[in-house]
Image 1 (cartoon, rainbow, N blue to C red):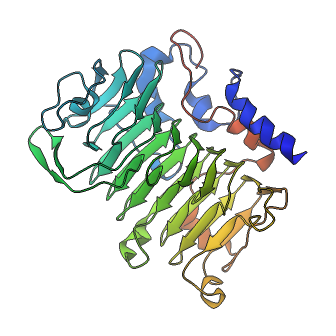
Image 2: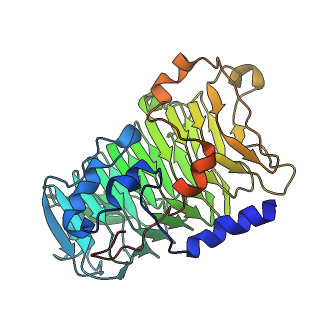
Length: 372
């Protein structure tokens, strides 16, 4: 029965089925509109969770990326993705055609930008990837991000008026550093050198939703270090994602802040799913956790660098989660609802609906004139 569950959760990725009103409030907000292509910016009104106020480039013009090359990170050519993201003005960035973009150096984003891959097949792969550093109001939607590599020790432009020396980057898929009002939605991420998504250095007001994560070790790090207490301001919503085949750990690993993990589908992990240190508050609601066959890896949770006498005071709760194949969640803390007020960002739906809600997680295959 469990084998069938795993097989079904993997095979569903290959199906094209979609019906409106799935119960996923983000998708139900825009995907039933056959005219989504001419109303792209309506997406900015569909965010939920702690990142719900991220407007990206909603108030700016469209910028069409027509050139997949990244020949000069200091002086990027007009029409390239790098030229688009460094501009000072708000921009809603779309793509003229299918493309694979191999970045020579980190793609350093400026504030008030949306990267919208709907309607085409866009991969950022086999090179550097995305850096969101000391900026605000970013939406990244509908992109395949994979095989990201460490780069750096080079000059890179971050705005029309500034470029500077970048030390070595770790090779994250998306690195969020000292930034706020960020929404990462409906992307497919896999196989990067470090994390798939990392958020550190007091980043906050973040929603990570509807993404499909596969084939990676340390999936998601939220919090810079145990000693960096400024991360206590961090609030992150992780909702409607599918954590799929080939994953090992950190879905996510949290420090200090407040984390709402809601209505995700965990079909694969090898070590653990959710971990943390330095007393983060973790609010797990309405998720589906399918444990691996390994009888030593059934526990969803993992605490680091603390004895039980310490972590028993950390507020980690499981409410309405579905546990399959022997999965279990070790709770701690007061258990009082008031303790989770800062880690609550939306109403959880029943865990029995997770399969439907996350059915189309990842980059979508949208075409103009049709429901997406």
